[in-house]
Image (cartoon, rainbow, N blue to C red; front, side, top):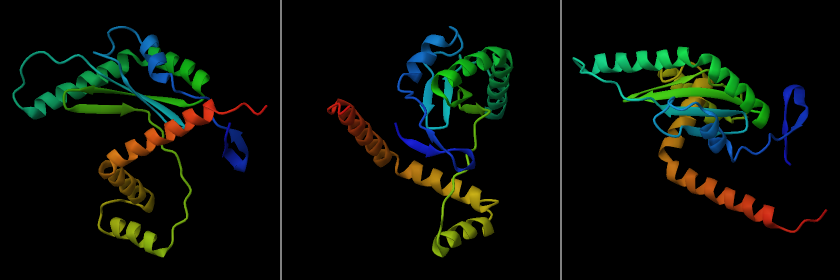
Length: 184
């Protein structure tokens, strides 16, 4: 198992595999919460579970009214399911050693609840800092941290196909490594 740096510079073991997290959540969530299986996204620190809510009934005078109704329904879902979501998250956090965040989608509205913001240490040379400072000066971001997050999102949007292929290749390497000889 690999190592990563934890609080105060101590090394800690990688969290356990969460390859089965989508199936675990699908089996654990109450029937009727979502119209289908939720989207479960996992990284080293967090699991994000987002599901589609049943469609709204009735007509709306305009798109603003529809968006307000969608947001209201998502807020109602958040309040009504809070205790159950906390219990499910507690069990998942124990199982996977990662925090759990929730979200819901309805029509054109999507909202995430209690997601993490994880500090990432990096060293940038002056040309990279100038890019961040330009984004701050132009009002695109309020800080270097926000500018860096903006740039990462932009790259993620435009390199999605390449990143998907890279993740698939990395998964294949992990599979091959697991099939290798046992040297113990």
